[in-house]
Amino acid sequence: MPHHRRRDSVQVQQLVQHAHLHATRAHNKLDLKDERITVLEDDKIVKDTKVAALEADKSDKDTKMSDMESDMTALTNRVTALETLGIQGISNAVSWTHLTEINLSGEKLTNGDFSQLGYVENTSYTFPTSPNGNHNTHYVFESTNRPLVIALKTIDGITEGEVYEMHRYHVGNGKANIQVSTDNMVWVSYRGINWEVVDKVPANWSVHGGTLNQTKLAQGIIKGSGGQVAVQQTFSQNIASGTKLIVKVTSDDDIKFTPIKGSGQADLNNDFTVLGSDGYVEYTTQTNTSGFKVSTVNGLREFSSVSIFQGAISGGTVQAYAGGGLEKISGTGGWNAGASSVQKIDGNSDGYVQFQWVAKSVRVGLKYSDTDYNVDSPYLHINFVTNTVGTKNVSPGDWFRIRHYASTNEIKYQLKETVYSQNADFVFETTSGSNYSYPSASRPKVISLNGSGTLTIGELYEVYTIRASDQALYLRDLDGNAHGYHGQGTRGVRFEVVEEEGQDYVSFYTEPTLTNGNDLYVDVSFWTVGARINDVTIVT
Image (cartoon, rainbow, N blue to C red; front, side, top):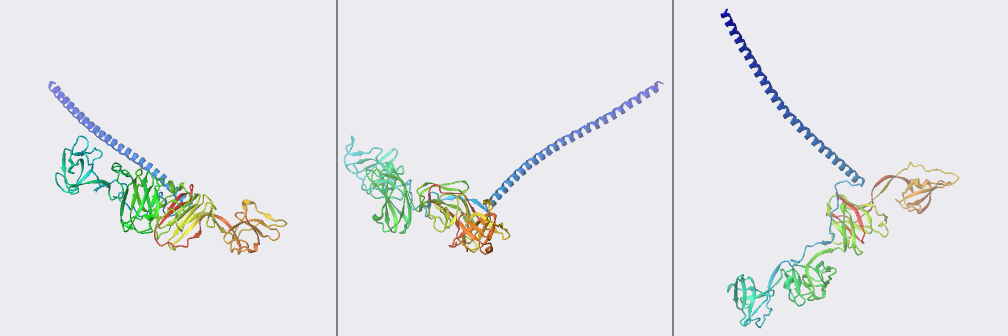
């Protein structure tokens, strides 16, 4: 029996071990499962993050798509608006240039603001003949009045071509005490051989009459020292007789200009004055001109800049507005102010300029170049006094086009107006016993077909009355002027009924001068203050 019990104990132990092994294996499987679950959960988090990012990206793209759709809607509306105005092609608001002056040649002068200075020998400079102060042999200059000297040779510590300041002058032997460096002074003899006095002068200018005030010159100002002074410059190339020039000067008073002939002599018969109040003058050369002499006339006047060029100066102030608008806001009456377009219509291309007339007399043309503020022919002239363009009646607010047709090299002037089509099927009212009068709001319109019977070919008329006796039509023009009765039997020959078809740009005049293939620019001129055009666009 004890032996049996021992065997049972062994079996129990084995069973316990076996159970423990199974439990360990089960636990290990559970741990593995937990690990796999953890991995799956981590993977899910990563995927959820990616999904969230994709959804955010989609939302951003949806927003951008919405913005693009809004932009497209705005563009569509803009195109519709342009088409309403009858604009096709590439349309741009005109940018303006030449509002204040037109410079056709570039600046004729060099160093016209006197900012660059040079030196010229002054052999007429007179030194004092007596010592000053406690000195027995030499004259000491004040620091503000020391002469400048140039070395004519390299000698005694000075270097040929260098300019120095003189501190003392030996009145006995004529030596100059010259400062060659901060702490080095040397005595040099023989004026005119080793050294000479020099004056500062504006580079590219020479002094002709008088002496320059050196203090003012250092500030870029031409003024005489003790009296009048004149400076002169010769051009790099002569200007032909008959050339129109603009001469400008910045001054405190009137300044005199004398042309220099090609021979180098002063043209005293054709001098002129630029008034200080104006600041410029338009001058036409009377001879072959090689330069100008500019004089202060007296010791009180001064000037700080001079400019000479071919061109024109505006006689008024012109304001440019957004959208290409343009208005004369100051100046005297006359075709003396305006502007020209930066953009152009290629000479061998179709295109037009379109604008709305606002007020006052205006000239607008397509030109090869802008040479003056008075737009030369051909041009569209809107006459404010008569509210006409030629014989065409117009009103402020009307829209115009000046159009170039490349295939025929023609320029046509167009007005936006109501257009009509003939309606041969229209039936007039019939009447008997008494005449019939159309209500003012429903009067039929007719157009003259052949210009007969007091009518003008192509003009519109309104039917006021139908005569009972013969059904004839009583006509007045659109201004209300009577044009009598016209029998309906002449319909289709003398006149025909028309009906409105909307608005379009209608050519009312074709310019007889043909274009030559050069590029065309918009050129505008205004007569008086308040003259204005709006929304000027160029279409190519």
